[in-house]
Length: 252
Length: 252
Image 1 (spheres, helix red, strand yellow):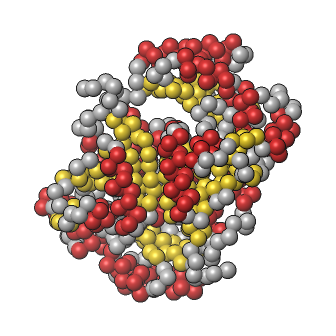
Image 2 (image 1 turned 45 degrees about the vertical axis):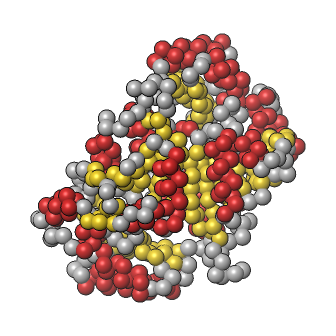
Image 3 (image 1 turned 120 degrees about the vertical axis):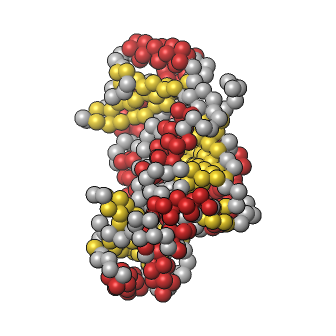
């Protein structure tokens, strides 16, 4: 494993329901947290409509410049599920019925009314693609080279990424720690910057909040090295204490 | 008002905290719902890191091909807040201290310890930009041509868009209605497609769920015309009833 290589991923969330505001996306955060554990850094996300041209633009750009691309949504049985067709078209591939996907669906629906035209749509994949198993709903996800085509329903997408755990090459997992404080971030901005600069390989993010009539902030420290992370956290706590602010490990 | 013109908007969510999975974004859905009421259609979203090049790419692309662009995040007082600098640089503009923003901050912090270097960062805007008032935290949002630079904290971003209500030119508001049913979407996919095709100017989205051991779906019908929407909803309910599925107006 090359310790200095940074492995990157992108997500393309496909779905009018997110853009209309009707559905609150839950897949970005879920996939992001899982990627951290795989040693892969999520660097960009796009949300696009159920529209072939929009999907093609996002998928070709994001898969082209990242190690991995995950798409969510648009692989169900209905007419607004066009992800497979749009991705296949974007790469000049035919859409074929995957024999194993068909067998999985026939088995799954054997006691649920049988496979019909809509359900068979879920066995269609871009030519040359592999399957990602899914224990929840029968219909599998799809892997096409570095593109992972996942369901939009969060608990099904979650099962699909769990099935991929440990199978994708990555770097060191990104570690993080949190310090909370009832400090107005606008008062300790300089202190944060100085602490980050003094700790190579560490990043400090500041996330203010307003609760119980008071302002405070949680500071998230990130590094791939546990010892560097620990030193940065300790120094930040000391600096904040010297500025008159107690800190709470784990955040407030 | 041109009834046939579709007004489009994009969102650029700026923030490592979203990409790390630590923070669940709430601004996309909030802004999307508000845009519907303004008669503006959200057509694309990008989530980018606190990185100048990434912000510049997203902002120039999205503002260039949409009527409006909303950015969230990265306008606070700390070192990781680089949105203003990145946007100004992307358009070749200087960053200047806006006199009214400075006055607002001096007033707001008069009883809170005064303005310091970090707080004054929040008065910096790309040259030529206007302010978007914010009653919550003092620090204003920023309007630069068709770009609206909002806070990342959802209740502050929410105040900022409320302040913009009715001020942006748009088309007819997009109307929607929901029918819920304990129908497996894979059994009625053909019915949905046929109903949508029979109703010009209407879109039907299908959102399956699994609850209480049973599968069902909510069908969201959208149109800018109330009468078209009503007819499509009525016909869909009839078609589902004929297929043996009762429907619940408003969704399940």
